[in-house]
Length: 247
Image (cartoon, rainbow, N blue to C red; front, top):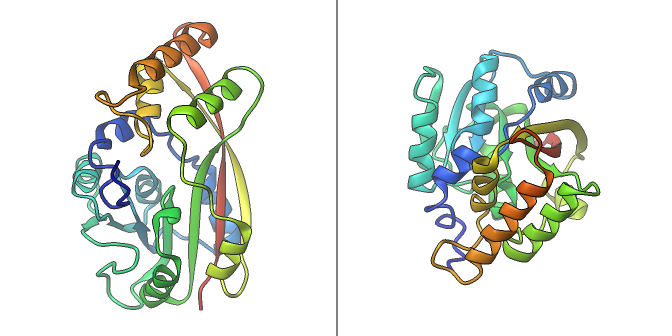
């Protein structure tokens, strides 16, 4: 199995587009209150992938630089965001973005920070941020409730175990002057195709030719048949925003 974080999503871009949950728009209000976010800000979305997080800031009015090292994911993001004049696709990494020094008000990363080399990424974020700029690291975390969400979590752990979420100590090391955690509820209703795409978008999920794939598919189908109502399932998330300054 390929453990290179830059290449892990090469075959999963389409599943990412179909299956990954969006971010709640109430995040913008949180960032307005906590960080002073304004529509005229310039943002660098690091590990921008298919553009899920970038789209929210573009709709808000920001100019967004989507920095993505994986060619397939970057191409998917360019397709998804082709209608936005303020979107700029950048072939770069968290540690070497290629952006100008002091050029952005906000650096964001959605579901991506755990793939970065934290010390080099912090230095690069500090370099590209304007004085008193902000960084916001974002995750959609599943809420494990009895029933479908608990069974889906067990299935995820069995077939598509994710890279561990950074610890509070790692956030404290990354944000030298302190950080805050804000949370926003985020629930989505999905159909069976989106459920399969959601699991397939995980970098650790078995592919069609891998051992375990037929069993994973059978278990997903069983969950959908058991818990869906009128062809839909509710996936429940909590969006976590770790934010702070780096200067």
